[in-house]
Length: 193
Image 1 (cartoon, rainbow, N blue to C red):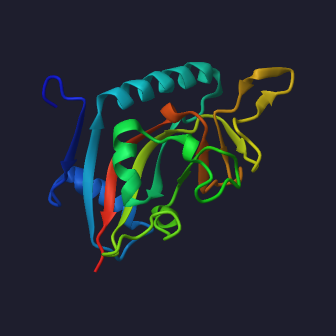
Image 2 (cartoon, rainbow, N blue to C red):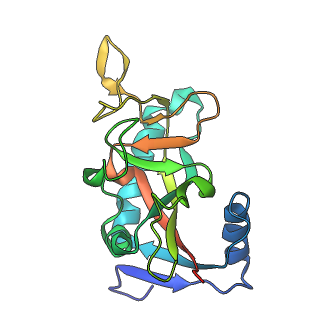
């Protein structure tokens, strides 16, 4: 990025290794689609995300757990600019559901995020799905009434889980409650007809 530039969106060339890597992961669950991939670079969001990553890593250092996962988030075309500029905002929780709490939802499989209820098609039929780095840390099963993750120990109410999931065994949904726990890395557009 150029000096003084806070945000940049770069369309990836289909022949690039970076494109192929993102495409390959996406096509594991969404095989039959024409797509376009853009890399997102936002200095302020990335700094905040890295600070949160350090905090969660330090807090959980003795646990030996994976702090970060690459997950998917389907959205509308109208929400894309806001997410690219200001990140994922949990204050919009509830637009689709809050089954596991009032946070921002991410899916392990792109096919889940590509459902029309999440990645609502435009008039032309195109859909938008973010590939995000998400700080899942140590998690537990969520509930609809959660505004923050629950305490890990009732005797230590300020030591909370980092996120919540749909199920502990092989979770397919992760929910975070802190806006800086997710960074929008790529925007995939599924091209309409």
